[in-house]
Length: 115
Image (cartoon, rainbow, N blue to C red; front, top):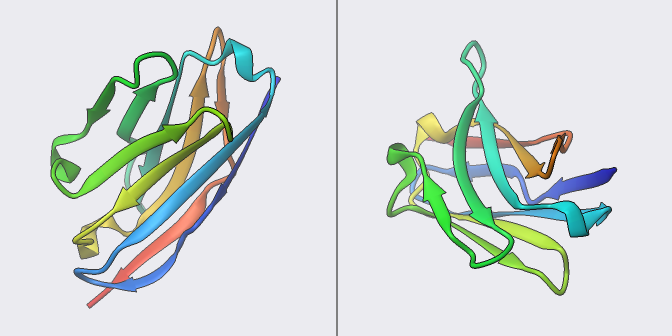
């Protein structure tokens, strides 16, 4: 079992920045990659960014490339999502995910971008 706890969401004006954190605990040795999904109201959940635990290979959805950066601190078992130049359309609940033979999800943190 892996437990994930997200933090760092909130309200920010368009053009601003936020950093999300996701702390993992439990069977962390089994995790192959971690990432962030988001779900806006009335829309499907979409994958935002991922990072492998070994090698730190990253992927991003096109809409956040150049604005968001995913990183990890293996010593702290924590993954971060630095979000810059935030847009109204980035408003969503952001969920952390950890992938092993199973998928583990955090409870989500709200990010609201205002004009």
